[in-house]
Image (cartoon, rainbow, N blue to C red; front, side, top):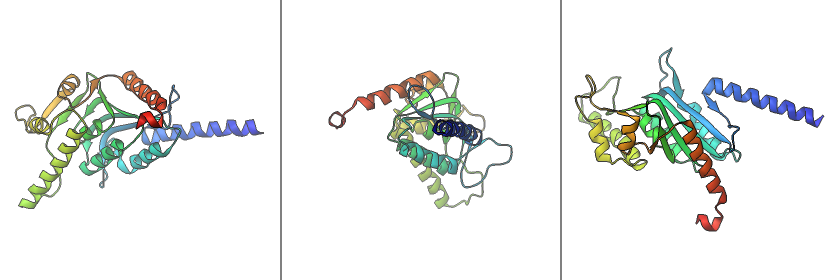
Length: 238
């Protein structure tokens, strides 16, 4: 009777995990040497306003409770964030980046395809960041697609928002705020726009991303950090 209940529970958990993968693109816990929660950030990062139909989106109200659960669940040992995003809502992206940076468990990000715009703070928010050689990252100033009032207060608001992004990126990577701003304001590289497109290798050289790597590299880093944290005693940790 007890064995049958256990099997049913395991089956229910498998069904739940498959549902979460379909609905949110998230894996509750991997079944490797250590329990890693895999979170994907894809398409447009959706904030207070819903994106148009047909767009792939990552909804921040879905991701926030997942990050809280990752921090609180004793069975989850580490977090892997996989990004392929064009950017999106600035405040939503920064909110998620701040939450990821506050996770006390070992964490890593892996940029596949693209980590553009507000995806950049997310890419640098974990303990260690990885990028595949074929991925790119687009740095550009804050944009606004809605109604804009031509008053000094509006310009000041954009400036403050840009400072928040620059400060976060510089504080969680090896690139300086000055260099980050230089790359964002570069002309002649993007058609009808300002900014810079960095390949994976160049993103590492600029200090924006920690290292070139693939999925196995990111997982190996997490495993080593989990095992290292597990060998620390309270005395050595202090």
